[in-house]
Each structure stands twice: as structure tokens, then as C-alpha cells.
Length: 100
Image (cartoon, rainbow, N blue to C red; front, side, top):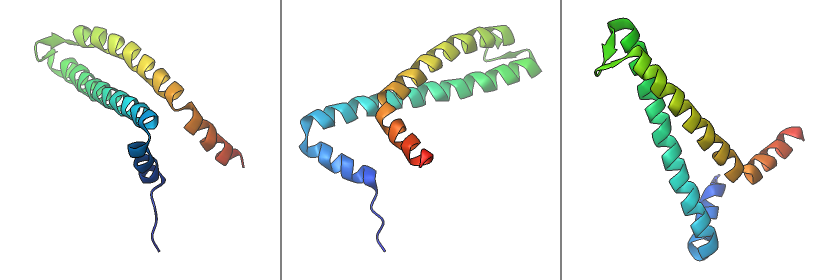
């Protein structure tokens, strides 16, 4: 039994359709930005934890990390909202599937 990934089909179609290819490239770039920001959140969380225990981490105090965390939180919220808007059609289909 061969299982075909539906996303593979979409990407194959995108190679032939310039409009779809452009849209998927924009989504891919945005996903990379979102992943990078997420890794930043992980770093800030570890830094906050370590600065609480040791007083400082990489020359930053706990308050410095909390300020940075507040700014990053706003950026992450904006990125997540944009991500949800960009993928609303997929989410709508998933909700339809869940609701029966």
C-alpha cells in the first residue's frame, strides 16, 4: 500500500503554476521567520530561567530578559495572527472535517 502525501501533490502543482508557486514561497518565508522567532523565545525563556538562578546570563539580568520577553511576546502574537490569516482556508477545511 502506497501512501501519497497530499502536500507533495500541491508542491508539484506549484512548480507548474507561477501564481501558486509565489504564494507558497511567501508562506515558506513566513514559516521560516516564525520558526526563527520561536527559537528566540526558547533562548529568552532559558535566559530568564538561568538569570533567575545565577543573577545574570550573558550579561543580562532577569529584568532585561523579561523586557525582551515582553517585546518578543508581542512579535510572536503578531506572527501567529498573520499565520492564522494566511492559513484560514486550511483551518476551515480542518474544522469542517472535525465537525463531521
